[in-house]
Image 1 (cartoon, rainbow, N blue to C red):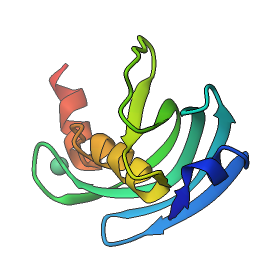
Image 2: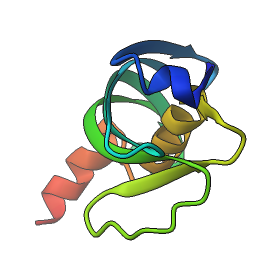
Image 3: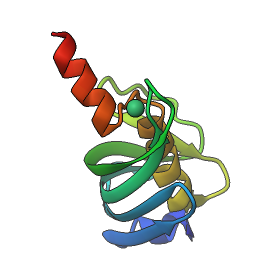
Image 4: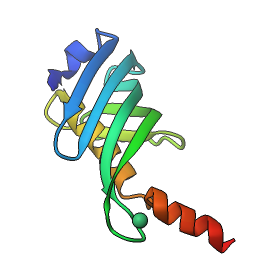
Length: 125
Ligand SMILES: [Zn+2]
């Protein structure tokens, strides 16, 4: 879902559902303009991601339920923000799929263990 930056700045809420082989997620973006070229965004999403067990390598479905705050910049972001990630778009459009996918990729690169490996882990302690 690509929407012109100027239009996004006027709306305040976008819903996006994503379904592919790896992700099955419903999301909502709440947008508030911060400056003429920066939007403050609350992103909520929940659903399932397919990843692999870090210990035995089998595929597992991981439930996710996340709330993330980020900044969306129209063009190169010249400022500095200590607290929030800044996503830059250089073509006057905001690509919501791209934002959501990059957050999901980030989560799926974390280490997860499947149920039976978690049980083994508990026995070790
Ligand atoms: Zn496992």
